Image (cartoon, rainbow, N blue to C red):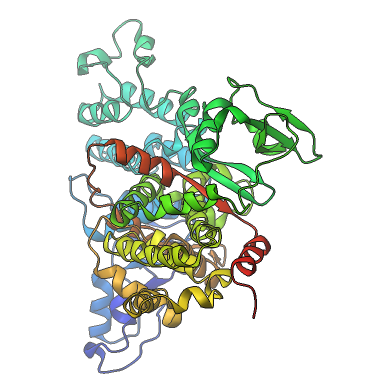
Length: 580
């Protein structure tokens, strides 16, 4: 028998406190594994036929290890090969196989390209037997397993891979192969129908249609033009929503969530309403890095790739002589603060949660993988995740901006109290992303130094804020937050920066390849962390019929006025409460 080195991991053996081994620590053994191990050499048939006797552990350890193997490392081809061998064609997979399949599909981009996976799956689907003629049942079973894996793959990724040309070509090719094979292997007809449903195809076929004796067989290789899955998105980008920053001054802006197709006039209207300024007096201007100004006409598209890469959007007065000055001490600024205080606290928190949920619900699990492993060129694969992270940062800055733009002490005290209540409501609504952002905004140095303001905060609010702060305590690896979040039922929104930190910690603390083998144990840990998003989104937040007040509140939450310069925030802080 040929000898092949492998690595195994069994969580039952790993537990040091296991009574089965009487407190004895067991080294991780190495076996000539006949079953369930990935190796980097060709296997002989008998190597998989019986259990190896090379282990020198006692019977209790040996029997426990034989019950379940957990993949630790292997070559990409062998990982895929064993995964296909271990798949069941029943509707319900056993837990270990289901987890292994999910781990592989979530993390394959770490060790192989999508094109590599497509080619490998085609080879497995079209493979010829090297050991004589296979039984028809075995051949059809192998083909069905490949189709099942493809089905799971596309179901997991949904429309996330729409633009991948390699995958689109692969789906066309494998569909043609199934059409060719279904006459010889009628059992594939069920899988073919599932495949058609997956691709959104609206044609019906029968086994007789696939007969190789029919003329013009090539016509069955043509696709229905109604293949939703394979169509280019084309104009979808025009309705795509993005965040854009419309600058009021060099270091303050209104964060606007809008569609790519939004006109300059609509952007100006949003900013004018936010700043309570006359729209007729304003113009939207693209300012290049060299200082050159280009006024956008009312019907011009405000957002374009050219603008994003080469210029900032500013709101100027019509004569283009000056930007607005939202920091001047005037009645308009004070009235704006009063408007905030007049908004119902619970409703404001609910709208923040609704907004965050709309962003969080779009984040694909794969985005966390790309964000962690890709250093360059990954922006297009992490768009939704980046928007959610940007939102968290902007809510933090928004809290500080609103407080520091309020010049009157009594109203500033009310504002701090209001934000404490909003944070508490966000926690009650299980929105930990905005909860963290608001607490961190209140703890910003430019806000926390406002001693006169904090002295006037009632004791019950201080106590409440202290309790809320305790959940953001980073000690013991954020134990307080993790314990509280674990007890919350779904739907819930996690503090995304901490989840990314967890994935990054696993990535940087473990090698991706060990002796040129994929460290699959590391990828399992990462996939397990990423899967937590599913539990958070197991249920959906309820939606209420929009009222006029709701629409006004929605507009307020969607478009935040923000100062993104710490120096300016400190200057405002010292203006309203000078250093004694």
